[in-house]
Image (cartoon, rainbow, N blue to C red; front, side):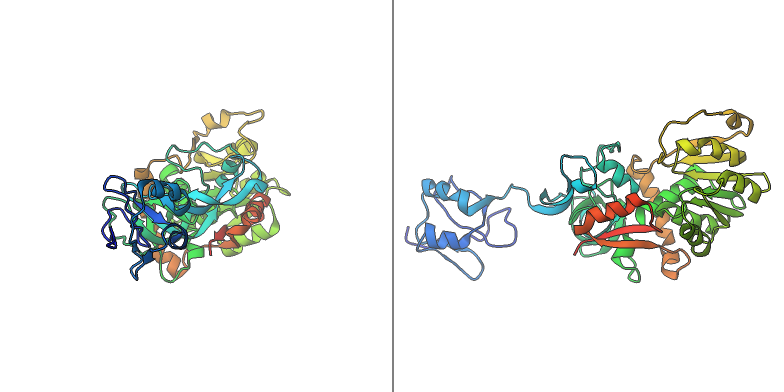
Length: 413
């Protein structure tokens, strides 16, 4: 009993100080030291800690002593590690309900997943809708907001992770959880970050560019030489979509927006054929004039109800429209659907977040092919504003005000 007890090989230990309090062979709890100095000073006067941070005691504590002090000295190995993440007081609410919760359990990686330490994340319109409690989440989505991010891989769950390794700088798309210090995400949805593009910029790529690719190529089936209209022309998705339309060989690219600075941005920076102010112009009449009455072959709409009739008016014969949002509401007032019949129009709704990983993975592969164009500047990523994540309320306010020209990003120090 007078011989020191030194334990080095307890299974399940994490790196760090390891206690070696032994009461008897059947009463050993594998715990982490929380207050080593408390142990040394108050519990076992003859105890010490060696250079390897092993706990050494001349007189092992009794079973009763161990349990008397364990609440103060230890935290159990199976207690979750905590991280900081943006949370919502009450579960849903307005932007003043957002706060950083330092008691969020750290996610764990399951089969095929990685744990990524996040450097930056993007703000999207769906985050506002989810915060207010109106977004139908897919079953695999955590409650934490955010679907796009950049960062470094910390660790992996079981399974094959392809070309990725610990320490890799990546960006990617997730079903949720990006407003946090760490995220568990499928490695299928990760991409290696180019060395020439910073973390902040990369965080603004996944959601917008994958959604635009989905709308343009998978849903609409875009054909070279056709014309297209992008509503909400200065939004992240349309900023990507206008550029992708030009690269794909669109004959004309039109857009709508709500201010002159946005119209100038859309035409001068993105290269759209023309852009129209929906607040001061009859955009439908302007597009019909610009196309000689023919209309446009493809329409990408985020607005919904208020635009439904005018979208039919400006659609060309055999035109196609994809609905990606309902910003003006889901109700269509006094609808006349006759043009759908006579023009042989095809209208389809689509969301990205509800799609399975196989579908999203195919879009991820398409996005990877754009990386050389991002690096060369052929395709441009426009960041409107960067906030520290401590200012998450301001970031959401900026999105709600709809004054942004491109992406809104939050960084984590």
